[in-house]
Image: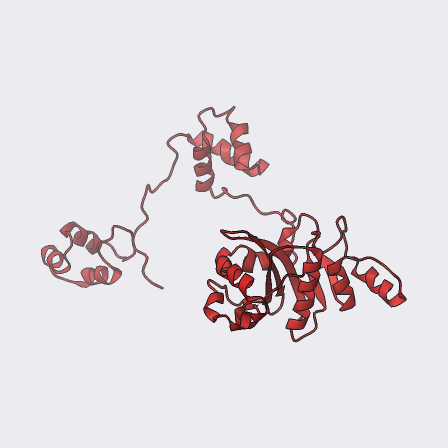
Length: 314
């Protein structure tokens, strides 16, 4: 471990040891090491080469008397109240007590932090481990100088494999087609998808996906109307799960990797190429789809030449 010296120190520990062992005069040592003779004399007298503690040897308050400090310490240890509550309670007895002087007093006596009590903080549960095929799917808006586009993102929880599409509109059918394209793109079974309860992924007002009900209706041969995304889940035997309302952190893997990184996509270049390309996007130069500022280990699948083309329906 390196030496930790004071900011104004002009000697190192090696120089200090050499001064203590040397029999030369103060003037000779001062000239040899380029320091003040008083500094040489100081280290000659000491037996250690470590810096001494700065500040007063007996720290005490310039505002509080010893009796005041005794009252503060006893009150804190018996009540275990927070700093501000102690201040309000003690100011009636000690009118000249301020928040800073109270904090410094508690710090001098080693009681500036309250002891942690079991049960104060709720235990945070970690995500379970799942096999390949558990995808988080989310939707984000991409603003360009010309218009607004919609970015659909799917990320595998285990491998961080990502699948992305840009669309001019965000509808239920687009979300359902996105899931079908994802299934075609990956080389393993997509068994579970996690989305929010937005209208693109489920019927408004649902607290649970209707994919299982749709699957039963398909098996029974019944006629029904269904949400496009949930229908895609049912027909591909995918477990569709919804996040709890007002719990955005359950899909933070997408927020951290994509939605909070505006530099990930050159949106304007991609949108322009997307309009021109259609199904012939493979003929366009790869430079149009250059990725920037991608956070490892995220790997994106953006179709041929780095982009997944989407064509308009007639």
